[in-house]
Length: 284
Image (cartoon, rainbow, N blue to C red; front, side):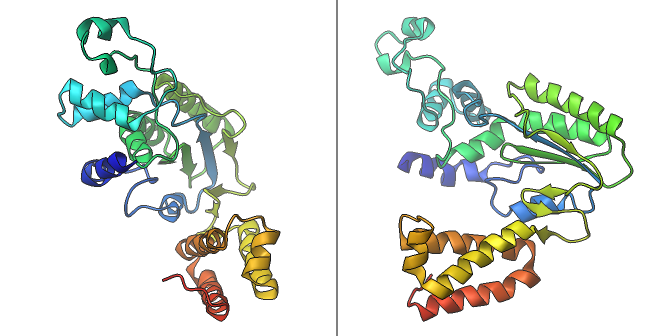
């Protein structure tokens, strides 16, 4: 973990990622990603199954090689950033090449583990060629393209048609599969005019971003429960493991709301901070 954090801050965070990738990038956010689709009439949504698990050690090795590292150094770095339970298996090619260094004889079975410090940025770097390809397809169909981790969104603010959307989705799906990923069938869909058009949980069918009614209700329910019953009782009622976990969860929801619908969220933030002070809790 310490080695991965060092790599993240001293190398990976300094590398440019695709302009249409928004997750795990400093200065980019869910709200900024969703704003690219404001005024959307049509949405095409593609979700990748097991996104991190599908980015194998060989691709990670190629990322480090592209930065000028020699093969063996890139191999060590890719090993630090990937994981596989089968690493005891011996690769016969490496066995002959490194007969005295048994640690280098394993195969390429590893992949990016979800939640590791380096996984998000490495995923962005590894799939940049796919982002280039999907951006080209989107431009040809008159669509706006963004990717937030494994969520790819394409939108059209102009008149579109279902046959055109189906044709674009077919081409996009084929391209995604060509890069070794499998779209999630239940989460890949076309959203036409008249349906709720949301991107990453934010409504984009108008001129400004809006939080969904369900999100607002969830956040306000937390505030009501904490105000009425107190932090400890609400923590136990909602099955949070600790008070800190509850506080950071609600504070994250408030921060998300501030980034998306500021006018609604500012009074909510004041109310939230006030109830924390009243119950002797500080976020500083």
